[in-house]
Amino acid sequence: MKQIMLIINPRAGTGQYRTNIPEVLEAFCQNDAVATVYMTTHGGHATELVAAHAHKYDIVVCCGGDGTLSETIAGLMALENRPPVGYIPMGTANDVAATLRLPKDAAEAARIALVGTPIPFDVGLFGGKHFAYIAAFGAFTEVSYQTPAENKQTLGHLAYVLEGMGHLGKIIPRKLVVEYDGGKRVEGKFIFGGVSNTTSIAGLVKLRPELVDLGDGEFEIILVKNPRSLMALNALFMDIVTQKYDSKYVQIFRAKEARFQFEEPVPWTRDGEAGGLHQEVDFQILQPGVQILVPKETE
Image 1 (cartoon, rainbow, N blue to C red):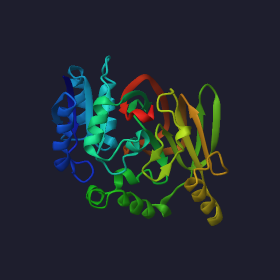
Image 2 (cartoon, one colour):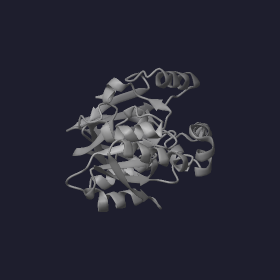
Image 3 (cartoon, rainbow, N blue to C red):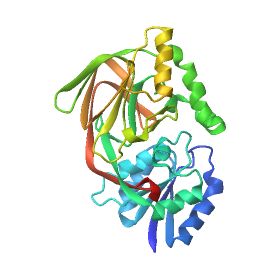
Image 4 (cartoon, rainbow, N blue to C red):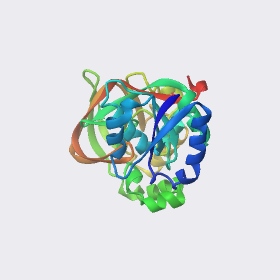
């Protein structure tokens, strides 16, 4: 019988765990598994719990949003022998769940956490801290952690869109130099920059699946140039909507390691949470990362 460490973030999403957990536990029982439940009570708690207890279990399953998954993965990175991780998405944007094609149905997601296919999932370091799927600065990156929690719970994904619209007039072009992979260099003025391992960013920006390999030892670096006119802004939005990259306004390339250098400290977000102010910050891939369980058809 499989022993499951089930981590629940009661504050994620709209609190639907109250109605979904019974069917999750039933799915575990039907697949010859027994779960021990750990409820998080504060930020970073999932990391603490996983680092302390995950070695005793066959699978670690987290129930919450992408932030809960990020904390869970950070805890696993503290272990030499890391059990695979399953993800039952109950957050707002659920970027990683969309990338992994995990279902919204909690019982089906629980089943996949037990019998799905384990695939390698890269983990990175951003300024010395782990991140799982996105570290970014600039346009709309503040939305994920500045949108009031009550708005997220009431409006769901629409809360991100509405909050993002309120930030349109506050977008500041940042002069940036990116050095990556042994001397390669990009520089210019950008309104957005991100180092990611996902096909969905804040539920607003989508990358084509063929551009992203979750376990290839590289992250995708996305840079968006400053549009200098309304016509240029419209062209930029069209590039993003139609997923047209390496265009006049949007660049995307892969890197194993990178350094971002600005003229002044810039606020970042890390896996949907505040990532601090950084004038110079280094990124690198940690290998091996973790194994994450996905539907069999996504092998």
